Length: 164
Image (cartoon, rainbow, N blue to C red):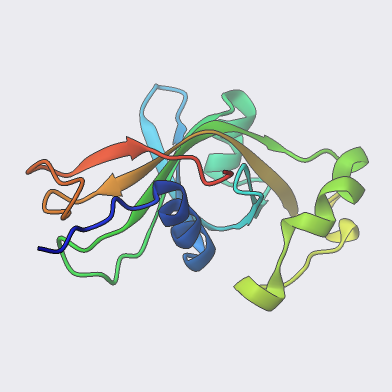
């Protein structure tokens, strides 16, 4: 009889965060409704997710007003029952000009993730773009209903910490 090992949920979270390039952010509109926006991101130590957005986007305005955010990182190409996802919850903020030198070295990883590095001059003053960072406070992974060791008959979220 073979025994299936219990998966390392932190490793599962790392694998998804390393492989998938987009996080769907959920922000809060003025009327309390949620607003979702996919953004290309770069994780740093799995606790900071960086992206660049136009300063006039709807989600940027929402985050200036209310920095609470939730998001999901998932591979939409997988068939039903095989999906993997990481749900993140935290607080986002626009990185101020006086902190850019500290954040820019870790905010982009074009060699591994594609995209490009942005220079500070592209992210300040009259420039249209701004650097944002989501400080993740909670991670959860998607566990499918039929998972061989963790399945319960229904899909669910299970806490995981990719930092350890």
